[in-house]
Length: 143
Image (cartoon, rainbow, N blue to C red):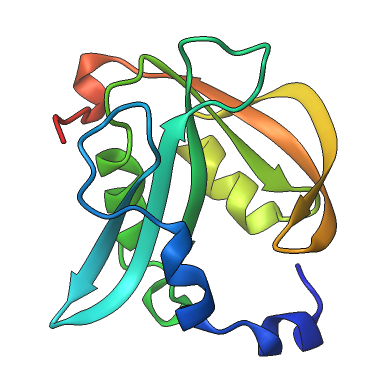
């Protein structure tokens, strides 16, 4: 979804400082990692929603799975475990990312018809917002 030359310039060591691992403060972003035999297969970052029209709502800021692990259940595990303490959550997905939209719809997320232009890591993108009500049977876990 993003230009190859942009993606080729990304360096993991430049990004690690943006993620909080092991934080139990529900007011701060929280990142979980999926490992298989000491190899990172994906991660998810959640926290309080940044949208002013969504008080008391959580946000899934990022969910990434290594393409070599697509279809192996890593994304489902990460999204289930990332639900945290929220009863309602939103996420923003790049317009045109149909693979991600199918994944989220299968998990019960629905569009709320909000769209925006945002800057992600210095690149302007168009995004649409999805939302989901979470219940205690959705795999909400204490951190």
